[in-house]
Length: 244
Ligand SMILES: O=c1ccn([C@@H]2O[C@H](COP(=O)(O)O)[C@@H](O)[C@H]2O)c(=O)[nH]1
Image 1: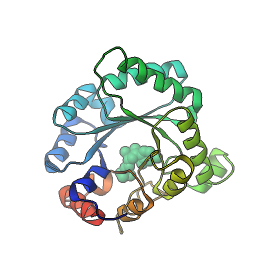
Image 2: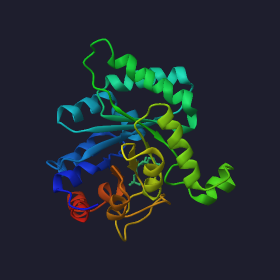
Image 3: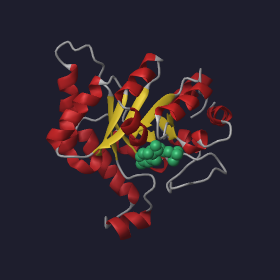
Image 4: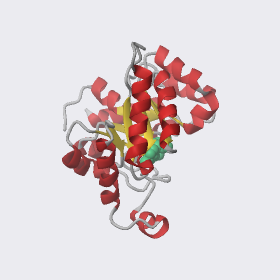
């Protein structure tokens, strides 16, 4: 895949705002001002800054992925999905490990929040498969799931699709197989992105931004290579450059 405009390339990047409080996240947002990237808010920032921070992002025109990886009994996830939908986020996720019934309940929660002329948009709902920090050895020897990581990812992806979800979170290494098994329209959102030479940190199943794009990923989630850089704006600009 080639020939993305700068705007399209920026729109494929979800910057992970993994900060302990809103002030630090605001500093990063000021630094990236004008770059039309997606913003991902995870548990660290959401538990600290709360729904008001999400509204602030939406007021400023950002597309927002709320990454809370809900994993609970179906009734609880249904309620959680309704509440998240009412925040007006563009995307949220549940954990595929909750099974098809739990994922169907999430979709029912979205339906309940958006039906009856509520005027609320339907968010993209995706399922976490195997975390990109999980290696083959950890999956087999520690967690005790037999088979390849890719097999486990595909199993979750098919369950998510059967439940009516729009896509999955997986590593870029599994994107081609997910698209082959679930179709090109089924979204792939891929963390585990590391520009050449960047520190891996706790990620194990990684690719560079250019490699991930070539696999056909829809969105790449990137945190520390941008947020931990001495010059975050230069870091994201360099990733955009790699994608155009
Ligand atoms: O499998 C997963 C699911 C979610 N994440 C999240 O993505 C970012 C990655 O941040 P980096 O700093 O680029 O490693 C982070 O917010 C994770 O919670 C993931 O890495 N893997």
